[in-house]
Amino acid sequence: MRITTGKYKGRVLKLPKGIRPTQNKVRKALFDILGDIEGLSFLELFAGSGSVGFEALSRGAGFLALVETNPDCLAAIKQNIELLKNPQCAVYPQDAQRAIENFHKSRKSFDIIFLDPPYYQDLVKKTLQTLEAYDILSPYGLVIAQHFKRENLPGSLGVLSLFRQYKYSQTLLSLYRKKEP
Image 1: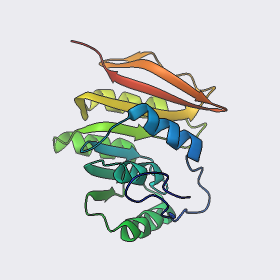
Image 2 (image 1 turned 180 degrees about the vertical axis):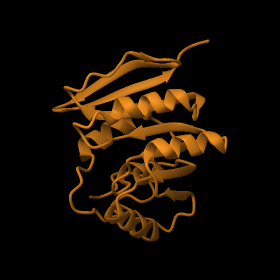
Image 3 (image 1 turned 45 degrees about the vertical axis):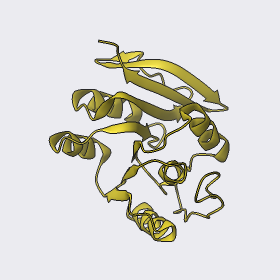
């Protein structure tokens, strides 16, 4: 897997075995949707190889937090960080739900939160509920959930509201933001 654009364009990322990485066309579409992310904080939950987060760094994100529990994925993420030599990155080797609670306790917030959990485990809805309960999204931030097209997500969860969906074959990108006060 290669980084497609930005200061790390063309760098080949280490991929652990047994994961379903975000396809290049979906990654490209995601960043076309986001536009300029210069200086924004980016959280990738269920990071896998970290490819989406590293693409965000390449495109100018100011800080990247990667949350992952799988030891093979963590090893790949650490190798990718060494490859990129970027100090604006932190790895959190813990469950996504616990990481969200810990970020909330330490008063950390993020401008963009991306989650792409394993399919067929109902983790998208559970994670969105945790994000609603433990607010770590900046006031004008976005939550982007990548999920299988047959997984139905709620249109609203407390302060989070679904405002747009994009379909790429079997994959959906669902975008949430905070409701207007």
